[in-house]
Length: 224
Image (cartoon, rainbow, N blue to C red; front, top):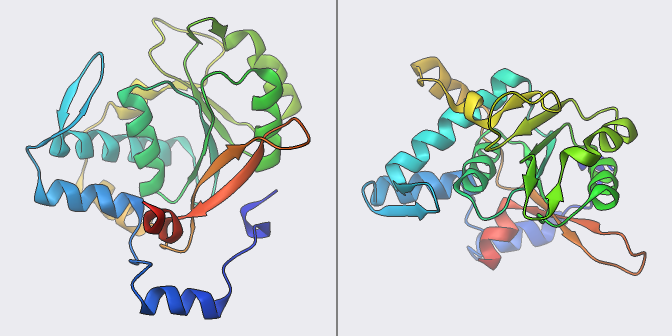
């Protein structure tokens, strides 16, 4: 289902939510930037490999966002994000928010059936995933997912040692750049609207296969 087919809030409700300031009119990417402006040196994220301040986190997010643009990910494209509780999950999530692309938030335990189904349902063009995590070897079913989803153009590896023919590119490679003034201008131009879909959440259902729940920046930040 393309994003244009998702039901939207009606005009009267949207105007009421805005007038009452239930909707703040900012995006999730804006929230990261505002936090960085206020707390640039405050610790923002810790995992098994890094400890980063907000300023360091935003730098990595912005470098990755530009990397996604250079790869060919467009505004409105959906991207499967299937990572465990790693710093790279945060980089990827907010980088996609910065450029108006929509992460589809997959749990790390999903295998071929669920991944392929959600990829088809959301018409995702990219999949960010490690080669393996715990007992799951994702490369063992990448071929089937790709065969069932010809629109899936990019398989982006995370924490994969050496070259791997299953992947299009690496997340680390996409981040390996210095930001220029033109890059920053392009990021600003790609900023989504607060009423745009921010991400798609999977949910179980009576069919036995997960469904996709779209959430906009406005309504998700309101819930938070």
